[in-house]
Amino acid sequence: MSELFELAENNRQSKSDCIFTSFLILHNQLSTAFDKIPGELSTRQFMTVLMLIRFGEKVPTLTELGKSLCCSRQNVKRIAGDLQKLGFVEFEQGKNNAILVKLTPKARAYTESFLPDHNATLQKLFADFSDTDINAFFYILKKFQKSIENFARIESKGEAQTE
Figure 1 (tube, rainbow, N blue to C red):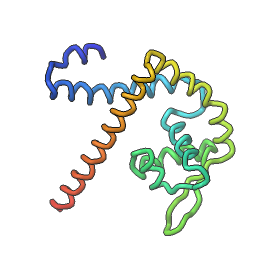
Figure 2: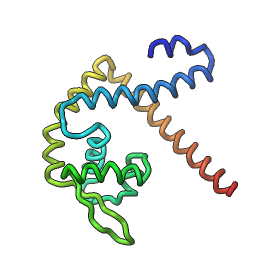
Figure 3: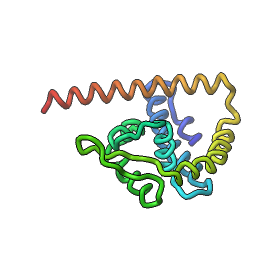
């Protein structure tokens, strides 16, 4: 990936292209790194379980879970379906035909046993980062997320106008 940075010319477009490509490559590298941690779940499945834990006592619908993970309802339904087969979630019928996704005790126990390895991997990945680096990276990612949300909102308004 270092070649990618070397190829980036000293202009905004070239650097933007490099950043975009880097995100896609880093996504794959992060998934590969975390999938090497011994465990029953893929990285995506584990992140779904973590998100369900973050909901606290509230049991989310598939739609709410999808929004929180920034993925489609269909994608989260597939992931949750796989988690159900493994005994990590249960589906319940909610209001207005909504499907609720509820963690099982097995998922909670698994997460408690898996988190130390997960956290150790995170510590290794960020070992070369100072607190200032972490804060700056966090700020930039937050800003980029907001930019993506604004882009999606503008694009969806444009689609609505052309229909």
